[in-house]
Image (cartoon, rainbow, N blue to C red; front, side, top):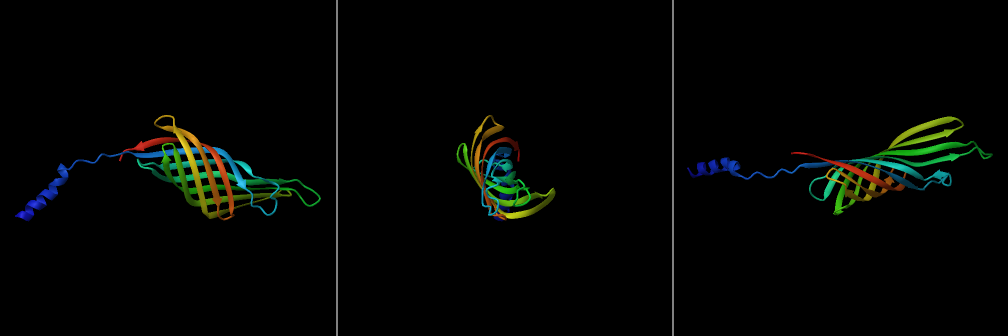
Length: 193
């Protein structure tokens, strides 16, 4: 009999338990644009390389109520471009190396408006070379990539914020490096659990 009473109370106890408050899932979609500088590691044509380009970043982040956020980041960067005019040493030509990144992003809030981020991922790299009006295009996948960044962002209202970001990028396959300074913005939205 005692066992039946215990089982009865165990079965009805969820009816009397206080419901836990459900917090919303916070998400954000962000974008950034700014200056990208390639740290020149070229052996041939290093003096011809244009190492300052424009870079673009896009983010989708899950931002729960604690300090750690995670999500995905993508971006487009022209790592370098170069142009060599025709001369007595040989024909002229153009070359360009571009990258589209697909990265995991882990971000931690250090101060109310200051964040540190980083993560691994892969990059699709595109190479275009033109010599004597003949163009060669190729693409390859770089799997060992890394990004590290520091971001300051200020809320405009409950949904929008704007700020700046300093980012270091490593492109593993080609052993190229760069850094970027961008203006970033984000839109925040919520889903109820």
